[in-house]
Amino acid sequence: MSAVIAFIGLGHMGGPMAANLVKAGHRVVGHDLVPEALKTAVAAGVEAAPSAGAAAAEADVVLTMLPAGRHVLALYQDEGLLAAARPGTLFVDCSTIDVADARTAHEAAVAAGHRAVDAPVSGGVMGAEAGTLTFMVGGDDAAFAQAEPLLAAMGKKAVHCGAAGAGQAAKICNNMILGVSMIAVSEAFVLGESLGLSHQALFDVASTASGQCWALSVNCPVPGPVPGSPANRDYRPGFAAPLMAKDLGLAANAVRAGGVDAELGLRAAALYAAFAEGDGAAEDFSGIVRAIRDRSGQQLADDKRDH
Ligand code: NAD
Image (cartoon, rainbow, N blue to C red; front, side, top):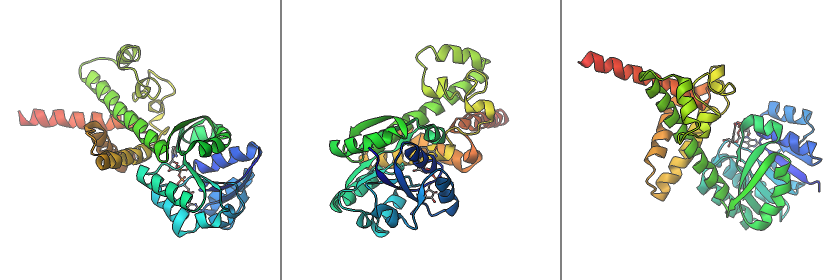
């Protein structure tokens, strides 16, 4: 059944997601603070609204795809998005935000008489364009059931992870595994180099043995073994290092708030924060192998000088 959807935040991800909702036959009324983003969405069939509130006022569903939790909370509360919507509207936040912010946003939506789910995504801009995103969803059964057909128009899979905030929790836990495993794989390749082991030999063994993981077999951080991996195109993203740094930062917040003993997760957050601020600012997250190799060379030079 077609719905009227207010889509707020038509950036790299939101733009193509809104376009896929249009393609599925929904009426999408969109808003973005950046006129260029709005213009691109209009070219894909989205109707431009003068404000987020104006878009929400006539919608059955309000979808947000914004940079961070503070944007979502400001829009929902201070900028009056919840108040502008008709009672009983479904709020779907697809942004990647802090678990605590997601729960606050959910409570505010319910207190204003609405339904809400957090539904962050995995799959990146290519997945948003192709309509193959995976959604990780938090909220009650009724809200999930209502959101599911819309998510199906933008993705290939929607997993109901639990109550409010569970979608964000799943996202940061998954990306903590990914960040830590990319560092582990990269360190192993650099160690292999220092031992005279070829990239291909290590790949052939580890990808069919217990070292196997996505960071190795799909997004391999060294050029050669996996032709499609970003390492073969000078580390152009892919999944950009600053986005990995952001997600690991959210994971680190949750680790600290929960008193969890996650040494590697915290270390990965620190390493990616430094990489994303430096050489990795425009690189795929697998480019961290070069930072590890550079530091290893430096270490060796320092050791030789000291002896
Ligand atoms: P983006 O910066 O391209 O898009 C965000 C858009 O929100 C911008 O166009 C901005 O103008 C708009 N915006 C901000 N405040 C607004 C407001 N008050 N009203 C209207 N518009 C507003 O970011 P993106 O890459 O599309 O990412 C969006 C979210 O998706 C982030 O939370 C990100 O972490 C997550 N995400 C991104 C990727 C990716 O590969 N880019 C992958 C997975 C998840």
